[in-house]
Length: 392
Ligand SMILES: [Zn+2]
Image (cartoon, helix red, strand yellow):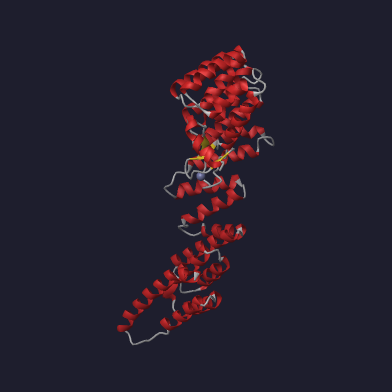
């Protein structure tokens, strides 16, 4: 039954070819065994004997090279069904035909490369796509797939080179992705060759001036070298680059301001951000923490209690209860357990492209594999329903 659904497009396609040939035959006296053999092949497919069917189709290809499109369609359907071996067999056979035009041959080579990708034999796919790059006008797909391969293998230097070539040869701007590759490279070399970090991040910036990740890594580098002022300057760039990522910079900002004995400046800066973005719970919680560090627990509690009325959030409530832990040793830990569960159940990071939600930061989305689409989110009371719904 499953095969029937799968065969519908092929049947339709073969029908079209049969009809086309029928009309052609009106003008020629040469009868070919084309239709009959095709239906023999289809019959094998219907009887779930795909390998026998492929034999028939391959034989047909030798007789008639006009059927290239049908073979491509058949092979692609096999690949989509996960039957990569069969797709490979058909594509390899196509490529071996001397009658193929160079355009058809290149297309079949790209498809064969995609078969190898699907089968997980990346070295073969890489070899094939690299070969395709040597022709006069290489197919764009070859660059794209090579970039994919080098990402999977974490060969960031190679990924960068290929991405640059792709950008030159296509109209697409993938600067943001190249910047992410430079960040990956910088992360890889963070401890092994720290002298190279600055240069890598500079390159990341030149490809994407709004690369938040480069700023975070730069700040981390400066902090480990005790260049606190430089670290703070780098971190403050994120405000202009992409405000949604500010929560990621808060721990480093705190360290920088503490090390330079400048907590009051940090305090005012947090207040100014909240004035423009009153819904940023993580900023309010950092401000609460900074108030606690400067003026003690009671002042922090008072501030947060007041703010929770105008901007309720689970995370805020949790912090407030934690601040009052000593005041009620029986009730507070009990409520805190509940808020802790709620906070943990909430997703802190969401992909703006595919909706993937998770509890840790991913610069490349595990769902859709896009770069820099995952960003921090906060749990507001409006999301409580979803949280409680999830517990059922
Ligand atoms: Zn995604």
